[in-house]
Length: 319
Image (cartoon, rainbow, N blue to C red; front, top):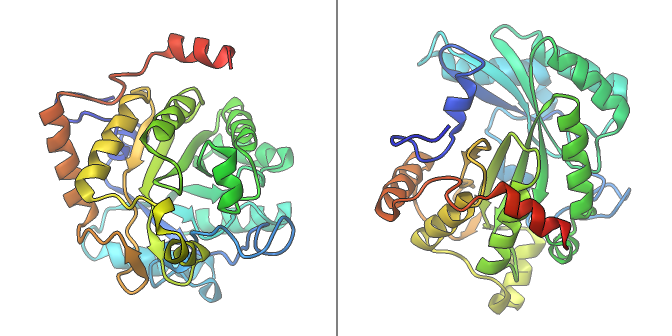
């Protein structure tokens, strides 16, 4: 929970409820694709996406799951020999496959020495009940979290960025996962085309009504080789690329509307400088967080300050 020292519910505090000592996510590229890439729902993927931005160098599907995890663990173990790890199935859609294949991959990751749980990144339209049955059983014997790419609560935006699903699909997947007692998170991009401050505050109120254990917020970044980068070249007036101070105030406004029981794992994403077009803040994650916390102190605010569960429910019931 937030406190005078920590004005929002951070991921380290959350993990401390489950583990003693340091726990680190290790990203895995398991060789999946997405239904909006392979033609099942579309081609080309999301307009903002270049998956190279998500993965460290050791994330290579040709290396296999065990090798990727062992390489990642080796990187951290030199400095933190007692650290334990969560296998993070991150690249593309990590539930988009045959059930037995998925089981084998998850179990292989959990068999690696030092791995104490898994985190599965996926799309809300790729979570069948048969897989949830298995993940529910798995969650009874190890730490499991499912992270859904929500990205926006606006269906027009979702269509524009070629997500291939609507917000109702995300709501359904999140609720079905939560009902199984599985920890569930959501990813959201702040600053997508035509989503102004008022729209994002409405989004925050929508997100606040969902049974999410965790959210990740990311600033919109323009990445080389993406369709969105080309769109920005053609119609820059439809984009607002936030300065770091603008985005800090936006992120604070956003989490003021979230319940203080919802973990805020991170506020920004960091893409390789060779791929990033804009905005380039030249700032590490910890530097951003320090600056955001100072700004929250200046504003005398905290996560949940503007959250009202009763009024949110009443507002939703009349829409």
